[in-house]
Structure formats: C-alpha cells, structure tokens
Amino acid sequence: MSVFFVHLKHAVTAVCLCFAVAGAVSAQEGRAAFLLEELRTAEADQIAGILESLDALWMQSGSPAIDLLLRRGEDALAEGAAEVALEHLTAAVDHAPEFAAAREARARAHYRLDQIGPALEDIRAALALNPDHIGAIRGLALILEELERFEDALALQHRLLDMMPAAEDVMAAIGRLETQLRGRDA
Image 1 (tube, one colour):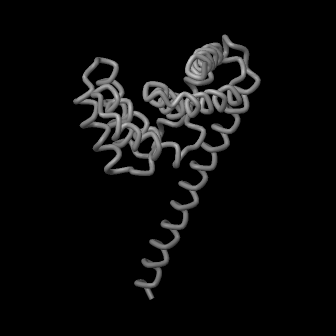
Image 2: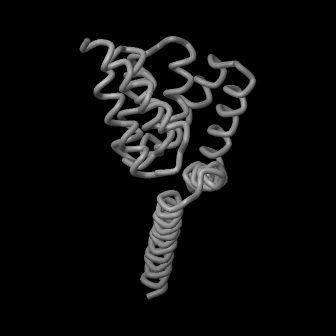
Image 3: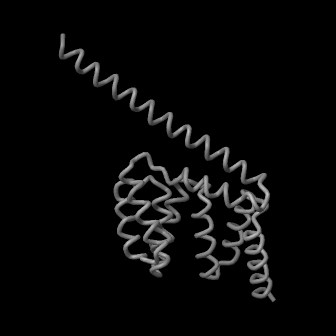
C-alpha cells in the first residue's frame, strides 16, 4: 500500500508541475499579446520601451541555465565578440531548440560573421516558433534587402508597420525600399 502512495505522490507532483509550467507559459503569452497590442497604439516615443519589455519577456526560457547562455551570448554580441556569442547561443539552441529568442540571437551572431545561410535558417526557425518576434522580422528584412530582394523586404517592413504604426525607422525603411523598387523598375 505504501508503494501505491509513493507513486501517487510522484504522479500528483508531476501533474502539478505541468499545470505550473502551462500557467507560466500562458501568462507569458498573455503579457506578450498585451505588449503587442500596446505597440499598435503607441506613439513613436513609446515604442522603444515597449520593445524592451517585449524582448525581456521573450528572453525568458523558463530555464535559468538557458537564460544564462542567452545573456552571455547577448553580452558577447554587445562586446563585438560574435564567435564567442555563437558558442553560447549554439549551446542555448542545442538545449532548447524551441526557444525563439536564442534562435534570433544566434542568427545575429551568424550575420555578424557573414554566415548568411545559417543566419537565415535561424531567423526562419525563430519566426516559426514566434511569428511576432520583431527582432527576427527586422533581421530577415535587413538580409533580404542586402540580397536585393526588395519586394520581400518591403512586405516584411509593411508587416512591421502593421505591428507598430508609429515606428519612424520602419516608415523610413519602407520609403528606402520603395525608392529602390522604383529605381529598378525605371
């Protein structure tokens, strides 16, 4: 009989942990949806703060070890050490392949090392995991513009403008891309 209660205790603990994790994920998704809606109505001077809050939220994997790897990768990128960043971020992606923020950060490391193929692969994976990841959308638009795929880059910039209509940098990118397309078509 005591073996039954031990197994029951373990089963109840596992169920409670599943509900706790599901609740945390649901709360994070709810907060992200709220912040994305805030972006849609934000004034230009409010956008940076909202994006910072959104990034901080999305940089939480739920694992302190993975979060540490991501922070170390981000710090290395900030210091201009893309190769070191790539090592930390690859470890994060290897251990948490479903973590969009690690994929997006690793894409930036690949990009800084002129590894465009792997950068695109990570950006696409990040967007498959989180279609609203603004950093990944911006990164993909930048790379497509450099590859002279102006129509595709313009479509992504319009997507960003739909997400944050007051973003002056997005409006400037749209103007630049439209000029590129007019010049190419002339």
